[in-house]
Image (cartoon, rainbow over all chains, first blue to last red; front, side):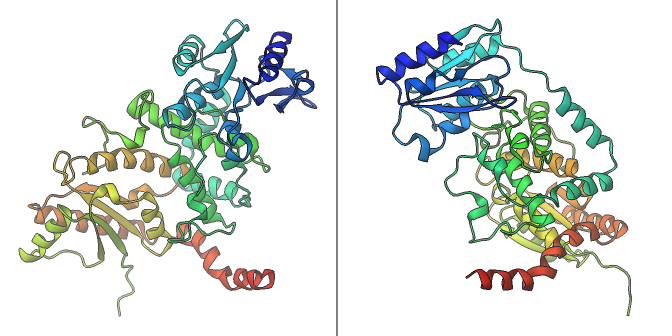
Length: 262
Length: 158
């Protein structure tokens, strides 16, 4: 913890970075902290409780515009960072990345190769809760699933917190703001809420790090991250682990197997 | 007048294979169900998944999506991309409880006029057995019923 503080202070002091995205102690759980000075850096913490995906801040142009940044990256933030670099949203090597090794030691990562190396060494956190949710929903008959999801999403008032929390939702012009054609009705209504989630998750296919930030951000606690988790499962089932370059849906394999096209 | 339910089916087809195939069905004088309305696209790769949802929201009881067989795409790989998209999209809809039995995906080449008739007839028969897609329309109707109110609300805000 002190090691991170002193390193961040040194980086800020030498102007190697202008802003450090890390965690500070919140009321109960660690919360994000954007540190721009040595005083801020003194509040930083970084341990196994820090699981939120902070990579989202790296994609915010209003925040990052021209600044050099550092980040304390959790497992899922590292995965998001990999994708962001692959999608040319971050420059490889431009961000000072700090992460924890499986043993809990602080490590500094320079390039995407280092990040991928660490991700390989680190076992993915278990997703028991999400897996159980998906299984529970899958076991319902189709009509009940429709009832369940429309019932949940009827409550959604389209604040788009799920979009704001997601590191992969970085489009400056999102489909929900396009009105020629108007794909989605802008007001909150059951069907357009459903359509919004379908759009969101389809656009995440093969890109989603499965961090669950969308569900955690929802002010109503709607299980929208479960839909994303299901998508991650499907991508893995059909196409294996997402390839390094190119998202799942912008590439193809002639030997893709399906059982519903006659 | 017959009160039997006549399903409305919307077919999204590619220009190069299935549209030509459907043309062949006509020129071959093969009769098939008239419930289907065909929308022509340059390629299956162009068929946005939102179009299927819009079809249901606007009153379709079933949807057919059809294009060139794998390896036959006019643009080499459009149908391969589409196939990937449908694999995930269909799974996602199923997970959300949308009735995926109402969406028929098929490959119909320009030479398969008879197969097109068969695909349409089977889909119409299947959807007729399933009945009108009331659940989806009910969710969509919420919008239709409230448009005036919502527009008024917007006027006041302006």
